[in-house]
Image 1 (cartoon, rainbow over the protein chains, first blue to last red):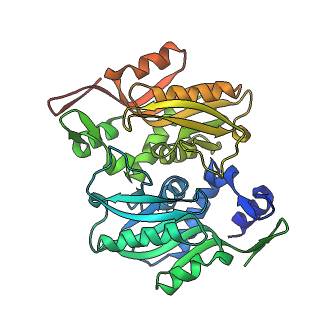
Image 2 (tube, chains in turn cyan, purple):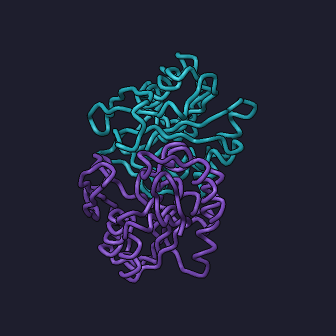
Image 3 (cartoon, rainbow over the protein chains, first blue to last red):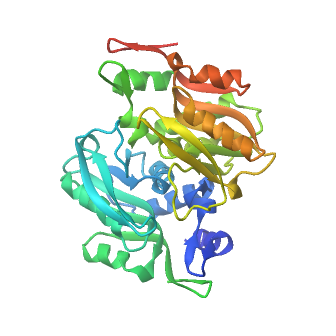
Length: 190
Length: 190
């Protein structure tokens, strides 16, 4: 998606020359008009694919998934929760995910109320690197007896292997921008 | 907002007869079409008010704020973060908020990059009860030298006093649904 690549190149920041920060439009401040265009692009790429529900994970995936839902005919959007809230049903599907960002393992939970057997679920997230979070969501979808209809990612770090793991698992992956490399403060797209 | 009140009455669940759960359309599963209608209603209520930016707090406020932004001409949406992420700038505005839900004090942070002096900021959140989170966001807006242009809330628990504290502070508050009471498993709107 050229509009996204341009945004990454003009507004993304590289920490230490290799950590891409897109806090200014995706992870802390949101460019909702761009998110809406991303949603339209996901709908274009998954045209003809039956989607009953969209699943994402808090926090940065929520806005992307919500805007995408507009372009998929408003299916319910469910966001997986990373922490145990007293207000979340104890009766939940659960998996563990390792976060490189926070350097810790955290639990991801989705109430059994909101994923049902046979549902075709589109998984949407902001980043795909090693794929731990995305594979955790696929695991939860399968625990529910639902079917991963595909994975839509905003920015895939193509050099960190997560994408290959998902494709090898037979799940269709569509990333709006795939980074080939980040080196010496320079971003290259695949 | 009648559509919202109807949704609360038909799909909200009461735990122990007095805890309202709207996980099925606002806090875990999202009815994005309804959120879009909420955004339009916020825009109608704040018509003529200059809004430079929308500020919300993760996680449940994000989708509401993002959909609202569509109806305010796509101002940047910033979501305050509840936990310290290694990827969040250390140079941030910070305040402490007590959560009755989680029965703990947590830190709320917004990068100094995304709130600037003089900006008129609309604060959007899903719930207003005792008002701790909302007042924390107002505090952060003021720390930035910005101006709270108003507060837009989806569901205000009118019997828990948060709304009065915000109005008494001279900040305009618009709640789409105000609960007068929840008793004996019965919801009454103001």
